[in-house]
Length: 189
Image 1 (cartoon, rainbow, N blue to C red):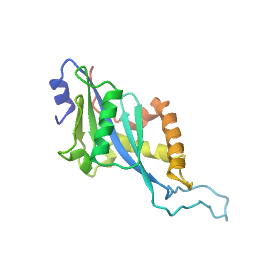
Image 2: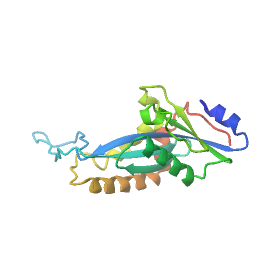
Image 3: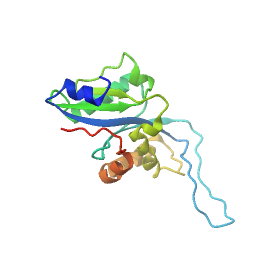
Image 4: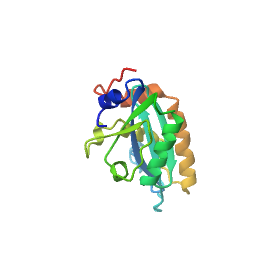
């Protein structure tokens, strides 16, 4: 299916929700941001030159501001399929509840090997258009707590990131204000 309307027509008795999903790579190499310092002073930020990464996967329903997060050590077709299966189970998707999930055109979103669970329908964004993806607006919020910090391990980075995601989950009005574009599909349920 290629549109929200097609999902609705294909499942007229089901509740249809529109969500967006994106991935964000975080690593021991820090996120640097500008800071205010007194005139004449040099800002100092610790660096860690180790190149180790983890992935933060964010799902957002712009209409409500609801979010769901996963932190994974790698991201490929198999891991993405597992995330979709977990999302489907967590939100009870099936015959009576369908989700149209807006994703970018990353290889693991478009491959024929990807097994999309029942109740989930992937809608592809135009290529190279991150400004249209509501989930892209989540990353500055998640980066706030890790900016200008050097972490000794991925476990430490994961703990701080997980705490931030739990805090953002409790702020749906903030998330809705950032992600609910005026043109985002309004689905009647």
